[in-house]
Length: 268
Image (cartoon, rainbow, N blue to C red; front, side, top):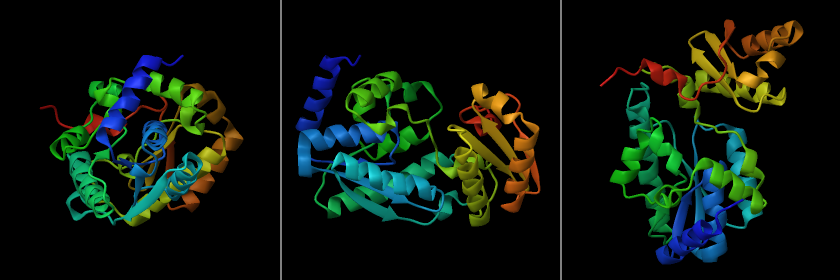
């Protein structure tokens, strides 16, 4: 069950801000923030979603539907791939967050909103999250982190609020599927998105298709590996992904691992 004192404190946090623009991806965390912001602040809250080639189209469409179901005003900010991250450097996430949240802040100011908030939670402080540095520098509010909300608490509270996202798997932008120091191409982003959409249609909820040039490396939840290891299904997957542009299709035997490409980052 949700700690109702924490929920009360979070609502008071929003009341103190007065107005808020929520960076809204439609994930578990940002949906929870947007829902509470709307309930506390009404039309003094707004959700802003970034629409970019490295954000899957289904995620944009889902964000629109979720914003409508919450009742919060929803705006889109369209942006191409910023040149500073086009080569996919090791500090890509920091550079990307800086670029995108600068645009979100500009959009928010144009609409009359002084505060911008994201969905970072308290668990994010325990993981490799270079984007947090950018958010701190830009003075973006992180209500869930500042009020020490963990992912489990957010899911539990979301369920009580009737949010469809309460059991939604974690997701990340398509750039996380491409090895660092690899030039980002629109064709790679398209074949990654099409491949993941296809695999999700087969019932694999948490899935990643890592793109290593002509090779697709599929990661599914460890508990889903037995479903994946079916000869007919593997043949179908291989044929479909190759039709999207991959020449080779491989399976990550260990299953899905968050940020698996971060292993290539040199130790400080």
